[in-house]
Image (cartoon, rainbow, N blue to C red; front, side, top):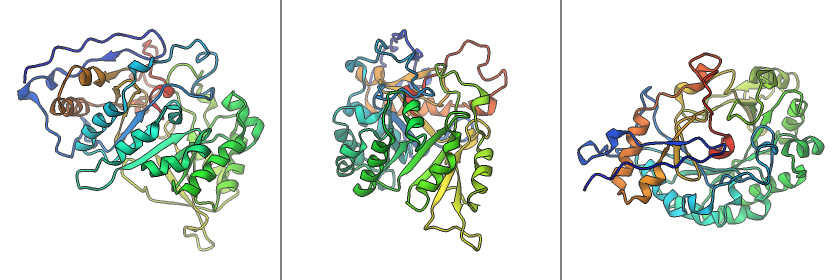
Length: 386
């Protein structure tokens, strides 16, 4: 096989950073890195989780993700021809699975806005891990379209969903999504997902001080004993459009302290390597975990970095591979796909990229070694998902 020409990259003049090339080591027959089911990066972290953004569009305008003043009616979303096709997504996913990925999460934007997403789910559901097991196939959604789509998603092969919900107070929720969407419709979607068997369901609440932190206890009361796992997420400094300030962050330790004034909690072990959430179970009268009451979790990406065992890669909707949620650039896999490269070369490129990964932004946060004062623009969460 002849060596392909070096890919050409065209920068997009908007909130998306420009792409970077595939490592030189990936090119050439003698440099190919075969997929053997176990791939580690420069810090010894295994590749196990792939998050795929299927659209850069969303029907909400949450201030911490897609503020309306930036993502207005004239925002230059990607044209359809720039998006990865379902077949291209599946091909890339297959190469990641060959390298040891066991879990795939579909994200956005709002992934349920991608037309015929059930077809993609069917294709991904046919993939198997290296030892022949089905993938853990999940999807994160704002819940706005979930009530009408839950049955079809389950039938296509989706296993479970995570729903973003930042409060039960309707006025607070409408204000935060900034499109006047009612909380009742999201709750209806959660119920529809439960009825369809898309579980266990997780609900993520981004907590912002002075905005919805008073909703922590009501949210816990509402979902306790329902089988839904509620997780509180520290407001993160993702991208450059949300006006993030440390003063707006409610540390997870503060969230747990508040919850413990209302509920007896007991710490739980991580359910999987690289898990982002610290798990807490509702305790019974003996101090053990009351399984009927369920559990909550906290994701402390600001105050307690979990870079050390991060096993996640992220694929943007037009095929750029990002190695960190706080990355400033992504590797252009789409060009590799569309220039006729075969699967061994695609797998080799992924292997070389991950093998060179040394990202640890959250561990460096606040230090000059991160990106403070450098003018580097990090990728937006709406572009590569959470």
